[in-house]
Image (tube, rainbow, N blue to C red; front, side, top):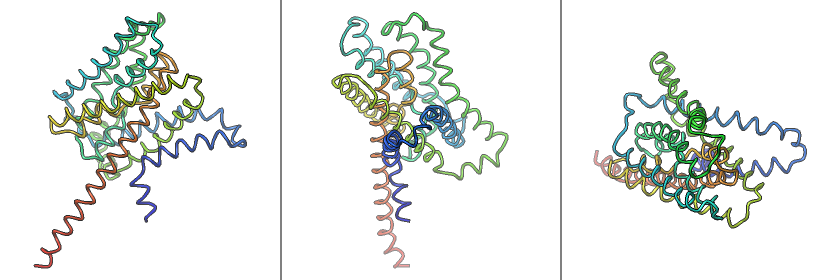
Length: 333
């Protein structure tokens, strides 16, 4: 029982450590060499499958009628799009700067849409899941428009004009975001008994995400190990991703506080779809730039682990206080 409780309490840190260790174990065991060619295929299949299932379970808990844009969402959109464009200006005027990949990494970290897993953490922390899901859909659609418009000026690529870029991003976004939403809506309407059964699995989405996180961390570690980037640029990308992570969580929580949704605001702006950001950097910029998404995945999951720890401690304290307060009352009865 103690072991199970420990695993439940520290799921995210254990998942991150497992992902990193699994990579080093896998590459250093000679007898696993024949399996290595299939590892990428497995990861490419497992990640979207886990994300789809996780989102499907999460969306089953959300009533589509409660999804709508708010003024809080507008402020967060202005921050993401505005910072993305401002960070790109130095690259327009100074395209040969040696710190190009650092600025590009910061741009990616700012414009990347909210993680599909953010709804899971928001629910665990007691935030407004409906508001977060609404913003997740909005920022994905906005990103699909803004990125193809802005990137040709920052990182010219004749083979990728606006419309092909838009379709490329939309093709990446739609299956992982809209299909589980539509499927969950269909189950809610046409299979109410199955929908009610799914609602009984309260933490299923969280543990699906833990598995997906382990895979993502393993992929991130592989990218860092195999890079030939100068250490100064590697550190610069790591620091840039850390700064953008801190800024977005802080601003999101501050904005959310004004609308009585501190947790949802912080997760909406701070927790990113790092699988998308890695793909975005590799597709539209360079493999070096894409490492910003890998570093960001470490930072935001470390912070989420801390938030879950704090939330658990507060809950335990509240429960202890309730027990103390209840004892005299019970004795009086």
